[in-house]
Image (tube, rainbow, N blue to C red; front, side):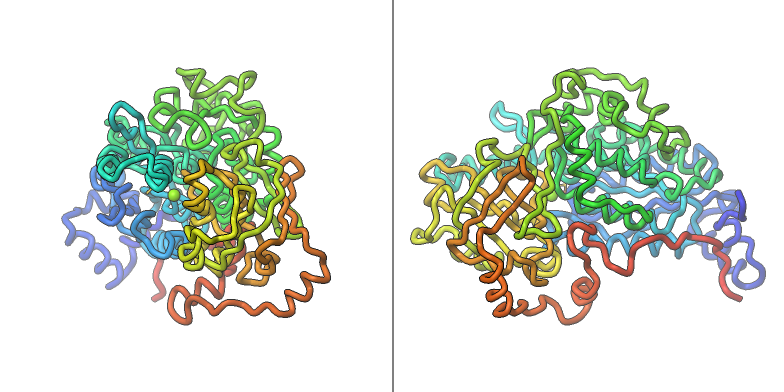
Length: 570
Ligand code: FES
Ligand code: MG
C-alpha cells in the first residue's frame, strides 16, 4: 500500500482525536485487537419498507463472519433503501440520492474497504455509482433473487405475471377471488423480482463489470449458498483492502463493454440503458446509446429469460448462473478485464460449468441471433429512444398509426378507459411528460395499459411511445426514453391527436409525419409545464438531472473524488 490504511490513521491520530476515536469505538465492545483492522464497512440497505431486502440482516452477519475469518473488523452501517414498490412517485427519483448517500458515507467514515448489499432495482446502480465515485476497495453483494412463484400448478414470475394477470383480470378472464388468491403465490419470500427485470439484470451486469464475486447474481435469496457466498465476500474484501484494489482499476471501458454484451445476451431490462451510462459517467467512461445498438447487433441472446423468454433466475442459477453465460460469451467479451477477485474475467469464467443448454444456449443455437434492445432515432427522438423489440410481437416492428396523446399520467388514468376515446388497435398511444424532469423522475409508465374497450376485443398489444421508462419485468411494443423529453421541449411535446407516427425497428427510426413548418408553429405555442418541485431534494433533482441517454445522473456528480487520507484537520 502506498499510504497508511485509513482506519490505522484514524486510530493512531495524536492527542484528543485519536483518544476519542479509540474510546468511542471501544464503547461498541471492540477491543485493541479489533482496532488493528482492516476496518471493513458493510453498507446495509435493509428496510422493512423493502421486501426484496428482508434477508439482509442475516446476509450481513454472514459477511461479518467472513471478515473476521480473514483478520478484518466488520462494521455495519445503513444507507437509504429503495424499495421499488413502496416509493412514490418513483424510486428513480431517489436513485441519485442513494448514490450520494453511499458515496459520501464511504468517504466520510474511517473504513478501508466496503461491501455493498443491494438487490431491489435502483439499489444496485446507486451503490455502483457511489462506490465508483468514492473509489475505495468495494465488492457488491446481492441479496439474491426470489424463488419462483407458484399457484395451482403454474410457475409465476414477479412482476411480469403481476401485469399479465392484471390485464387478464381487467379483461374479465380471471375472477376477483382468484385474482386475490394469486397475491399469496407469486412472491414467496425474500429476494428481488426473479424474472430478468431490472434487479436481475443489474445483478448480472455487476458480475460482468467485475464488481462482484462470480455467481453473485443468481443464487436464490433463500439458498444457504447465498450465505456461504456472503462469507466469501467478507474474506475477499478484507484482502482487497490490503491490496488497495479499487473500482477505478476494474470499471474500465472494457468492463462496461462487457456489461453491454451481457445485457444484450440476457435480453435484459431497458433500465440498464439508463443505469450503465450513469455508472460509467462516475468512472469517466462515455457510453453513448449507439454502443448499445452496435454491441446488441453482434450479440446473440443466449439466456432464455422471462419476460422475453421462458425461464427465471432459479433456472439460471441451476444452469450455472452468469459465469456460465459469460463462459459461452467469452469470444465476445474482453476476457482480460480485471475483477474484484484480482484475476481476470476469463480466468474466472473459462472453467464455469454449464448445466443446461436450454436455459443458457450455445452460441451456435441462440434464442435470438442478436440482442433484445434497439436504439431508435428520428424527428420524434433526435437524441434517441430505445425499444426492447425482443419483447414485442414481430409484426409490430414496422407500424404506422394515428397518435392518441396523453399529457401525463393523470390524463392517462382519466381517459384511457373512456368508452368514447377515439382509439383503435392500430393507434399509437403517446404518453408524454413522463421523463426525468416531467415525470418527475422518469417513472415506469411507458407500457400504457391497453384501453378496456380494445381488451374486450382481444387486443393485448399496441405501439406505445413515451419519454418515461418501463419496468424491466414488462413487455409489449413500447418505445421508451424518448429524448429530449417533452417537459424540456423535446418534439414529443408537439404531437397532437391524429398525427401519424411511424415506427421502424429494423430501420432504427421513429418518425412523426408532420412537416417542419407545422412543428415550428407548434413549438412557438408551446409552454413548459409547471415544475413538479420548488424546494428540497425534488428541486435539486429538477435543477441537475440530465436526460436519459446520459443516465439521468446529476450534472455535478460525474467523475470520482477518491477517498484518501482519513487524517482530520488539526
Ligand atoms: Fe424489488 Fe421487484 S420489487 S426487485
Ligand atoms: Mg422494476
